[in-house]
Length: 150
Length: 119
Image (tube, rainbow over all chains, first blue to last red; front, top):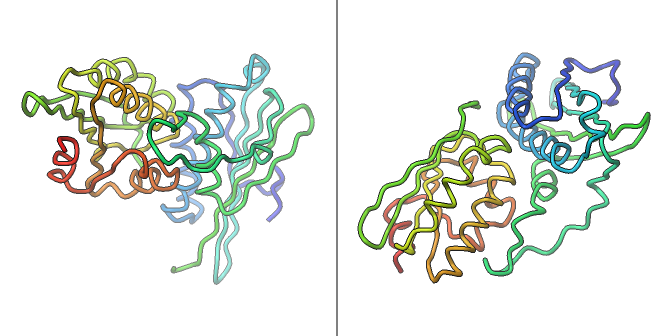
């Protein structure tokens, strides 16, 4: 599956605003189910989508609000397996989450840093994550896989 | 998958223990909506708190950030905060995936959660 706009089964544009996040989740659930993505895999994509949008809204800067965030859903199923991916494209500050070095997990509450878990969450829920910067935009794609009937 | 807004309320079980009930979506908007009240309810002089997440529909990292921040504040005051998730498998999975369950005790059984909070 190649993540290009040519083969997206659904697309949505939203503002870089916290009030838009639940609308994006509802869109993902509806379109994912319509295209045969299992509920569990939709929930995994939703976890990643929320973290990606929170990063853009919180850290993307004024540039992130200068044009809509574009969401694209890709689905491919065959007889034995399926895969679905979401690409999040934004005009905010360039940020490659794959370059972020994960810290070892904390051992005590006192030493636990409250932040930095969004990237951990994405790695925990996505089977594959890809990032590129082009046309003045971040393009973050996260993908989930499943076995048909599994 | 529900898109209910987040709500929060509490019940003082006795002079030592408070249960804080959070419901709905703890995404960026929901966490912001309950944030101030959560901090106020957590800052109890009862010192022992169970946060009931069994009716939380969605838990994002910003929601975990709020849990950790308030749990640390409670600990610094000499208290303790534990989490009750009940049968809420998605929320339990988020807490395990991020490793937060290792530093913030999580229980599926309500009585065990209360016992741990008061220990």
